[in-house]
Amino acid sequence: MQPNVLIYHANQCDPKKCTGIRLSRMKHATILKTMKEIPHRSVVLNPVSEIAFSKVDREALLHSGLVALDCSWKQAEDIFANSKYGIQRALPYLLAANPINTYKPIKLSTAEAIAAALYIVGFQEYARDVMSVFKWGPSFLILNQELLDAYFNCTSSTEVVAVQKEIMDSQTR
Image 1: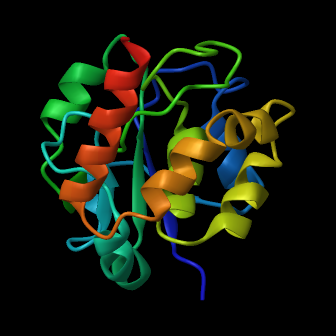
Image 2: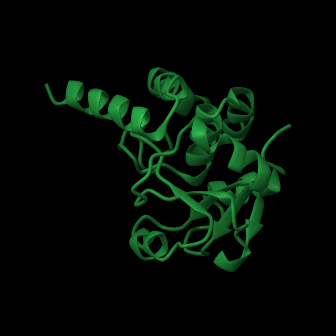
Image 3: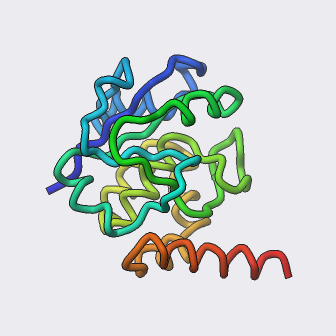
């Protein structure tokens, strides 16, 4: 059984470059027009959440869906700060591979965020399918393979945060 992938689309980007719209066109996700459409117990990827996304979120994700918030990074603070629907979770440290933010930490495209979440909770093949829609997509999984595997092996949000801290500490040495 694959999780239902939903995308709240804020209409702030170029539709031709929007990874969320492309995933919807390829039948990998459903677009939501308003935040009120976000299912009550779904897992919402929100980089300003204080709780890290982990395997613990798998059941909620399977039951009520995975939601990505698709908006411009320039206006993201307002969108993410006002997101109160669903179970809010932040993805751990990862590097973007998309053409706009290549190698920038945390500034993932909607597709990258969805694929990372799917990978971490055990849907690695589905994550590969999602990223195969983009020329640069497989590069995201290759670039972050070690990190994604480390997060996949964690059993709790606290463990994910500890692994993330180790990774970030090792990069500052």
